[in-house]
Image (tube, rainbow, N blue to C red; front, side, top):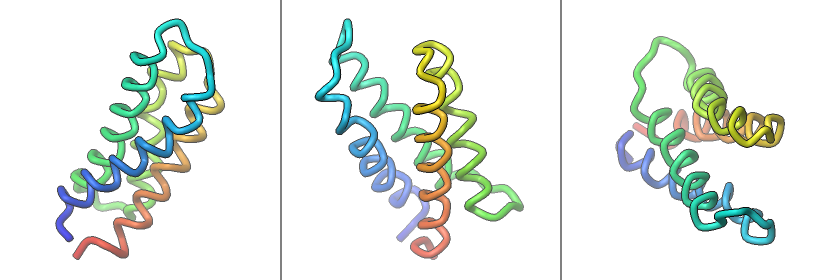
Length: 102
């Protein structure tokens, strides 16, 4: 599997997992909140797959998962859940990338 195709697939999976619990919650603009959460998690996985740094891929995932989650965490004031989901999800995407992409 190539890095870009892994990024798209991992982004769809990560995005779907991130939005699944949101359907039971209430928001002022639920469609916008769900769409934004999906796009953010999709972008995190895609960036992790495409970035080339001389670090272990798990570290790249952890960094970008956390870093790209900060704006949403600050805006929504739901800091802990958003940052933890971004960090853990990024870490997992990075680890899986190591074993799947050749």
